[in-house]
Length: 145
Image (tube, rainbow, N blue to C red):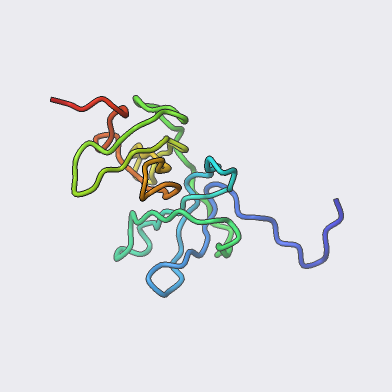
């Protein structure tokens, strides 16, 4: 494939990128990449400790919305799978709204915490992406007593 002189490769896992947060660009690291049920590529950016006001903040975005900030990278921890593999139907355990969907990504945060990206399948939320911890989810149709 021919590439022009100004070709910039797309950001990769672990790279420091600029992500748009609260009307300003804030550096963060790409901690996961996945594909939605509609076939759209997405990535998750987590703000590191360099920005304490936003540290740990996670954003789902497309790689085309990111800007490389520099050569810095982080070593990502391997995913330790819990109860929910990609494709598993899950629901939010409790809260002010019902959220039913399918797991589209499992990843480890920069602090080593397991997280899941769930794509909503229920009416009113269909297609929305939400990040949950394992404790916030249960199998769809399995309510704890």
